Length: 261
Image (cartoon, rainbow, N blue to C red; front, side, top):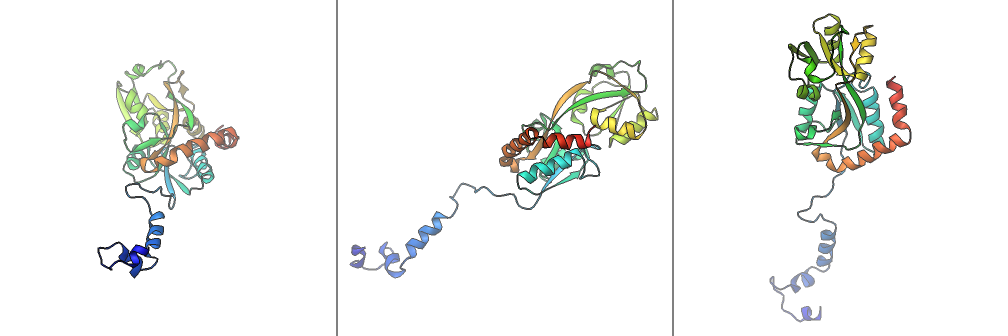
């Protein structure tokens, strides 16, 4: 500092700031200390509310924002102090919308979807196990594996990737919007076999007072997962941890038993 006192003031001289603007250097250093480091994005908190889609129908999703999936999501994200809304969207559209970043997450889809939709990140803790099964009006029809479908008129819900992948041979194929339409096709004998999964099938068939033959064993048993858009990748470990926690403390079972009998 003494050298600066005896030095000629010029713009090129580092003593200029110290003599002309007292305290400037200190203020500058403080501002730099509280600024993000260049080249490293600061972690941003979640702003507003997240939109999580469900392509399932009752009892997993009822009227868009009720049912097992919506209540599970609301409880899960409330524990994480994140606002969330669950919206019903057809299975065929929900993954495309999420991959484009139009929504924030989806519940619940099979493992491996992220290989098709590159912008999705899977939450590793499973949500539920589902049995993917076939129903028919004729119990003499034998369906125990995918290739057994080849001689029949088949129907399933549009956008269900497990069936898109495995149903390769059939007499005819019809895809519909939801379980009600699917069950109605079989009840009216418009198709020979419908493909669905256990929970929503049982609920809808009971409502229709319709008891077709359920083929066993299931064509597949699958673990189902939450997927988030990659912009929320940092939340995935927290979601997985909290989902595991509410399973262990009994919250998950309480919600499950409320909707699924």
